[in-house]
Image (cartoon, rainbow, N blue to C red; front, side, top):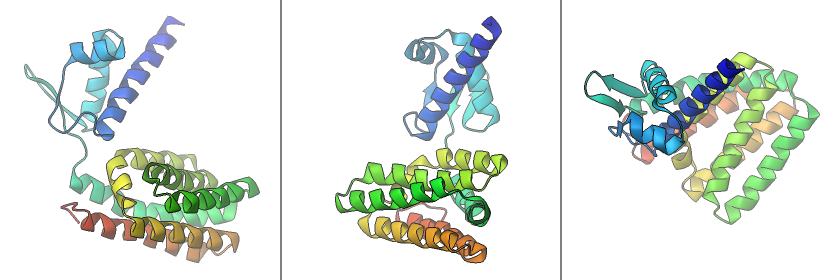
Length: 218
């Protein structure tokens, strides 16, 4: 039981620090002091140290002997690479979802689009980002592939800033909703080829918009 609690605590500390890096709370170059993080999270230094080691292996943190740990974060090139990979995997996700999606999931996607249109009129950008994420997560779930869902969900977390930027303008937000509607229609029509093509193009359009937003690697 104690071992399970320790594992659970380590996992929570790791996830908390990781999310703060990916969200930008801990910016690139920021020093991550074990004492400060332990106090902030209300834990001892041990789970913090273990979390930093894991984040170091993932490339989000750089640990220099006698100098401590610093945030590396996600670079513009990382974002570009992730979106390029996503452009292929989103298409695959939509293709598989076309074959496996349930009526409940179809109804959820319909509701998300309606809510997106409502929030678009009110310029609720935060809600638009959440709804965009939810739309894609349902597609991942509908693909009926645990591996694909896991990979794509991780990618979503890694590009939080970019995702927010991608719907920051009303014009792009409107186009994004229209693209979602087209993907959903293709899925409802059981057109796997079209669903894959539209999902692929959707992510490529996001990449083009990120270039306009100033991401250097695009």
